[in-house]
Length: 279
Image 1: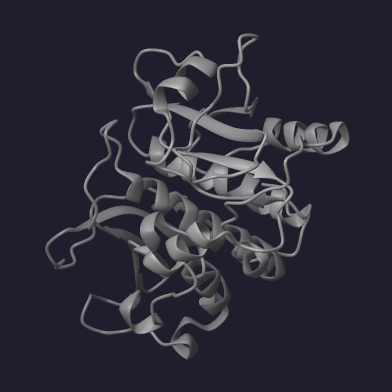
Image 2: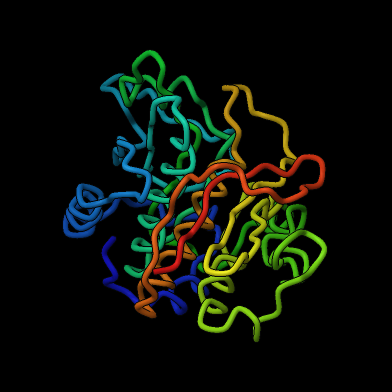
């Protein structure tokens, strides 16, 4: 992980951009993005393939499609991964780090999980059997004023709203909310996680503090998309990225591990994913 930009400032500046200037990335910016991509890693040691793609993917004018959701963008980031345990979480983690880096450069991005032409992106990336492209993002120079459609979409998914701490973070079990005071030095990583983006802003992550371990759970509230991909697993990786980058910035030692499922009574649709072990 490369902490080359301030975490809180960048997290708060990042927002979904759906309208872009009708121009391609400059060669300098493209080189920066591609160089940063080659250095991306994730705590689950899973290989992710990233590609920076042009809107026109062939000489006969074939275009990458987003069903009118995105306007003006000439460049896209796409990522593929094999269908393995924690692979979608790993993709979300690395992709969000790249998104935050792009934000630090003044670029706009927008997570797209269902509103893009999977076939055209699969062709552009030479997708292999057993691999999926769960998400893509346009990347480019934002237009200052939102389109009417963009404003409506933001309102529909409440993109600027975030859940309260008491609904996301707990101690020992799911009946006792964790306060910021009780979280202590981990209040900052948890707050950065709270501000992370997620599919239709559902914020599926739930965290239970149990002594020196933070257990991460996914509340399953969305149907899988047409590619049979659980986008909320990607969301878990996005949240983990925010948490980890904030912890590293504050020099908090720890690591992500997939442990045996904790002996904690869980509500329906709540699933253990991984843990952060302090120290």
